Structure formats: structure tokens, C-alpha cells
Length: 352
Image (tube, rainbow, N blue to C red; front, side):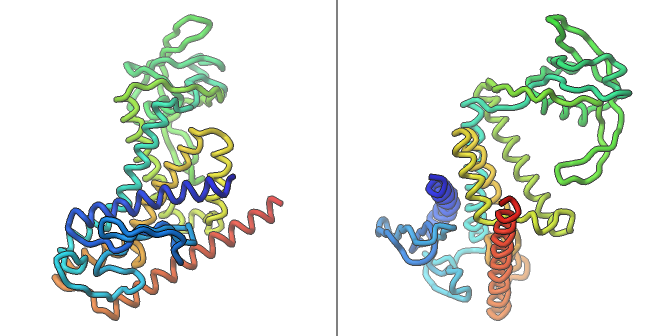
């Protein structure tokens, strides 16, 4: 069942990505010869509306094959008003960007759906107060429920951290304890901490930790839209930063996961709950969008770079350079896939 869920989720994400390319290409009058979910030999295909729609044997990706643009033939040139080759560089960039953009839009839709169904989060309830901290001296205690900070109503634990780190000066905490509302004035202090990449940082803190109580947010449609936007931006930012940390060596290459890890995460989420599955699907969708924008020649980001070069210099890269960089791009991607699978297998044996 987990394998089937994995294939369905991945095919769903690939379909949206390629649909973005397809719609943008058709908007600019480019003929799309083939729309494929999967690679390799077709197991089902149907010709409709000028395009061959197919499912292929290897369900680990997909592609749209446009007239005048074929990644298996990087130097292909075809003429005609319906050819990718004859479109202006900015139009080609829009077509290329439309795929990753579709993944971001899909993630936002999924997060919006999660918000309406009832997103789970930590309650704004204190579990622990650090000794000799601003919260300790202000008299905050375990099980206190923070309901307001200054003029901002508090619904979840995340909101507490946002206000503390983004404001200046002292803060007024309105705390519910034994059915009474207490007002505490607290001056956050700059303290040592760690971010999600285990880097040492300094930030404003008051010395409290959550109780771990989980609540379900009840959001209106406007609030759900804000939730979806913030979650999509946060996920995109974290993935971009993660790639940067990986390149700089802060995150070891052993942390790279492959298709086995992705499959396990999707399978575990599907067994947990439908909302968990939607959350993982949204995160992977953002991941696909970000990764496809990397300036690697075999990816959308690499092709965008070629077109930006053409816009700036008023000439296309030479065929030799284009072919060499594209082949290098495929080699880089192949190495990353092999590394991911190698790490997956290592984890299986280590955990076994």
C-alpha cells in the first residue's frame, strides 16, 4: 500500500509541474508533442488535442516534449510559429518557470486545505521555565497559558516566538492561570541558541519551552489563506537555505535522501493521517519547485540561465558549450541520485 501511495503522490506532483509547463507553452502557441508521467517505454498513451498523453514505465518524474525543445537532443532546432525555438527568450523563461511555479501553487493549495480541515500545532502553554531567565523572574510558571502579548492575540506557540524575536523592548504577557488572567511585563534578553541547521545563533528569548500539548486551529478562510502563504514561503526559504548549507558544508552530504527515503516518508505519513499525507505532499511539492530552479543545465533553472544569457548578450550559447553543460548537468543529477540511494541503503542497514 505504501508503494502505491508513493507512486500516486509522486505522479500527482509531477503532473502539476508538467501541467505548468504545458499551459504556459500553449499560451504562447508552442506545440506540445508529448506529455509524459514517468520515463522510458510508454505503458499507456492516448493522442488528444494535438498532444500524446502517456504513462511510462519508470514513475520517477515526467516531462513535456515541446516542438523545438527536447532535453534528450539539446541542440535540436525546429522552425515555425509553434516551435519553442522561435519564441523570445523571456517567453521561454516564462514557460520554464511555470513548472516550478505550479509546484509552489499546489503546495499553497494543499496548505490551505489543511488549514480548513484543521491544522495541528502546539498550544501556547508553558511546559518549562528556565531558571534565572526573564520569564523566571517575571513569575511565569509551567502550565500557564499565554493568551495575548501586547495587543496581539495568541493562538499557538509559534506566534509567541515570532513576536519575541521581531519586536523591541519589553513585552506585556497576558497569562491564564487557574481561570485568572495575570499580566506580566518581561524584557527578553539576547541568548545563545541553535537554528534548525544546528548552527549557533543569538536571538531574543525569555526562557520558556512548550508543554507539548497539541491543538487544532480553527481558521476562517482569510486566515487559512494567510496560513497557506506563510507555510509555503517558510518551506521554500528553508529548502533554499538547506541547499546553501549543503553546498557550504554545514550540512553533511550524508543527509541527502533518495527515492527510498521519500517513499518511506510518504508511506509513514499515509499511515498516520490524511492531513499528515497532505503536509508531506505539500513539502515535497515545494522541494520539487526549488530544486528545479537550481542553475543546473539539465533542470529548468539551467535552461532559464541559458535564456538569460541570450537576453543579455543577444546571442545563444554555442552548440558545443550548450551540449557540454547539459551533459555535465545530467552527470551532476545522476551523481546526486546515486548518493541519495547510497545514503538510503546505509540508513536501512544502520537502522536494521
